[in-house]
Every structure is written in structure tokens, then in C-alpha cells.
Image 1 (cartoon, rainbow, N blue to C red):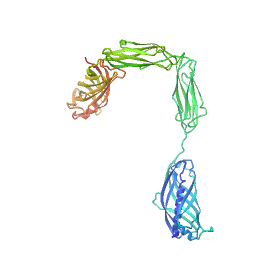
Image 2: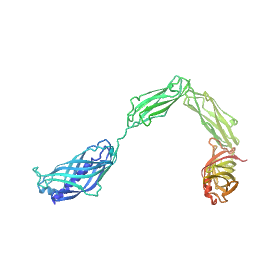
Image 3: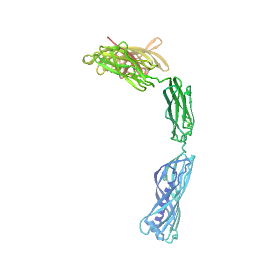
Image 4: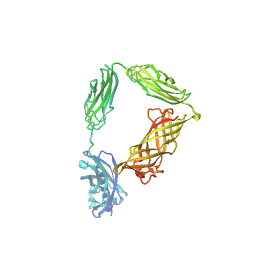
Length: 606
């Protein structure tokens, strides 16, 4: 029985050696991760026969390997704890030390083959304590490297294999202990139906190193340069790839290539993450705009050629360039007896001082406005400002122009439209307006257009610029094309509009926005079969299942005024119709849907 315990302990040593050997299986330069499993073995031993053992196996094994990159050799170490019964069994035959060799054969399985890895571990002469208790038996060795090929690319498995042991127990004088304990040779076998997978790793192909070119800009704009002088700008080339980038050629082409030249320090090529510079010089000799193209050719297979636009303007002498912003001024509505102002900026983007010859308000209502400014001479790159003021004297719209005259030879006079509307203050700050509407709406589903007429009765809050209104759109009719199976039929429809809620919106600084909720009703729809009209739907209850929310805005860049009105437009969705008879679904095919447009002209009604 003592021998049984000894053999079980020795088998534990062998299993631990097997696990340690697997530490080298599939290893690479990748970071290792902790893996473990538990397996049962059977090992035949002298006298006591085949004995079962269980082994806890753990190792640090990387999960990535690279083709052509040998896995590093690992020193494998294992420690087996021998119990007291085994120690006693050894002592009974006079053993003082135990030593030997363990051999583990493990399998590394790739998509196309299975590799055997043989690991030999030495068990040094280990003293067997005379005192009771457990003792440790160490073992160590070197796991051979594994070289993966392209056939191994993919998922590989490391599985625990077989184990053989060669053990020697020695007496105090170094002699081998009496047989059959003195020398033991045994081949251990894994029990079936066990998961002996210890690690799954990815075998990757050798990374392809590639150069990648990048530049820090796609345009070099030199601005205005006096003829006979030069200006220089630089562009940086960067290698963002993983291999050396060769710069094959750098050239300038185009109709005006002769006024641009380049120098660079890129002849040696670029290592990964390195950069070089291209210096471009613009040297105009005459007046006028000049353009060319800088082309960089490299060994980047994906972008073998990169172009950068070159531009500049030659000037016979330094010149100013005037820039006025904004290009129009709308002061909006102003209560009679009050004032409102806005600012206009005059800038100089040229390379010489800009002389402001005069700034004046001109036009039919110029006297309704005043202006003050600090503009005399504007240095290159500088600006000055003009304050435009409007004092509302009597109700009505005032239009004028702020005219700036300067030394800019190409734009000696610039006119900025100026407009404002004076309005009377009303009791409670409210203004009642009645606006007539006229226009049309396009039903996107059929391409048919409906003419629209009606009115909007509005109460405008002068302080906030918000309003509420009642919208009335008169009944109308239109013609459409209806697709039935593979044919198109001409159809006509009577359409009515029912207000579903108050129209709300705002009128601020000449910009009108409004939202009108309306039910769309279709009392009659008919198609023509030959000369005979055939009613296909409609009725008193035929209307949209929910209100149509029509969003209207005044045209961009226009001034909508209560005194003059203006154009508004919008896009809306037409909900499905309901209660239109047996052919309701057919009607919805060409009446309901998104993308319907509306365009109206709103005109004050006196």
C-alpha cells in the first residue's frame, strides 16, 4: 500500500510535468494568459498494477502566434507534493532520495496538421525527509520551440497528451534502492471522454508592412504677391505606414507652373512616422491670378500620386481689397417714435492701405436713416465699422442704400441695401391684419396641382413678434393621374379644407414662420372612362385621419412686411384619408404621403 501511494504521487508529478510542457506549446511574443484544466490518467506500476490519478494542469500560454516566428523556448518547472504515505513507502526500502526523467508528448492541432511536442524534464535528486509529513519534488526542463507555417493559419488547439516516467530511488550511499522500487518505468494513459483542451490560439500570417503617404494640406494659397517679389509656403509629407516610403518624384505642372518652384528634403525617403518638407515659392512677374498643381509621387500602392493645388495673384503694386459685411441690412419692424440700429463692417483683405473716400445713405428714403463711422484709412488686414440707425417717424416701409466709395480699384463703389418698417403702436400692443392668400399646392403622389385661395385673419403681438390667426382656404379642385394595375387614368377631385386649430407663428425682423393645422376633405373623386365620368370615392365624411400640419416660411433673403406681405412656402406630409367609401385604399395610393409642397403669396387686405 505504501507503494500505491508513492506511485500515485509520482503520477501527479508526471501530470504536472505534462502541464508545464504545454506552457511552451504555441507560445509567441504575445502576452500569455492563464489557462487550466483537470484530467484523469491511468499509470501501470510494479506490484500494485494500474492506478488512476488526477492532475490539475495550469500554465501561462499566449493566445496568438505568428507564421515564421519561432515560439520562444520556455523553462518548464513543476513541483509535486508527495504525501506522507508515499514518503513512508520509500523509507521502508531505505530510500533517501528520488530522481529521474519525465517525458511528455503533447499535441498542437492546426487546421491542416497535428504537431507533436516532446518535452524532457529532469527530476533532480530530491531528499526524502525522515520526519513525517508531505515533501516537494521539483522538476524542470526546456520546452522546444514551435515554428508555424502558412498551413497553420487559423485557430490552433493545444491538447494534453501522453506521459512516460523514468524514476530512480537511491539509498544513503547512493546505491539504487531494492527492486522493484529502485527503478520504475511507466507509460500513463488519459482516460477517455475528457476535454483535454488547454488553450486555443490564433496563428496569424506575417503582417504585411506597407508605406502610407499623407500630407498636411491639399492647397497652398499665396494670396496677392507684388510682381518681382516672392512668397513661400510649405507642405509636410508624412509616412503613416509600417514600411519605408519612397518619394519617387515631386513636380509642378499646369499653365502657370513657371511662376512656382519647389525644393524639398525628401530624397532619402521616409521611415515609418517620419516626415519631410516641400517648400514652394511663388514668384509672379505680371499682374493676374495664377494656378498650378504640385504632384507628389511615392511608393504608396494605394495612393501613388497626390496633388496639391497652388494658387496666387500677382499684382503690379500693393493693392487694397475691400470687403463689406453684411451685404444687406434689415432692421425689421420699429414702433413709431423709437429707433433701431445695426452695424456694417468694412474690412481690407488686400496688401495695401484702403482709403475710404465717402460713406453715404442714398435712395428714396435715405433721410429716414442716419449713419456714423470711424472709417478713414483701413490698414491691410484691419477693419472699421459703420452704425446705421433708423428712427420711425410714420408708419410705412423705408428703403435706402449705404454706399461706400473707396480706393479699391476693382470695387470702387459698394452698395448695401438698407430697409426698415415703421409701425404704429396699437392698444394692448396688438395689430389686427387680414391677409389674402393665393397660390398652389403640389400633391407629390400624383404630380397634380391644386390652386389655392383664401385668407388669414391675424392678431400680431408687436412686442414679441408672435401671432395667432384663423386660416380659411376655399374649396378647390384639380386633375390627377391615377395608376390602376398597369394603366394610368385621368381623375378629378374636389378638395376642401377645415381648420383644425389656431394658426400660430412669428414675424421677427422680416422673417415669417407659421404652422396651420388643417383637415383635408375630399367630397368627390371621379375618373374618366372615355367621355363618361365615374365616381370612385369621396363623401361628406371623407377626410384625412388627422390634421395636416402645414409649416410656412418666408423666402430666404426677403423681407416679409405686414404692410406689403410677401411669398411663403413649405413642405408637408398628407395623412391617409378615411371614410371615403370602398375605394379608400385606392385614393390613399395617390393622395396621401410625404413631400407635398405649397407656395403662397400673402397680400394685405385693406
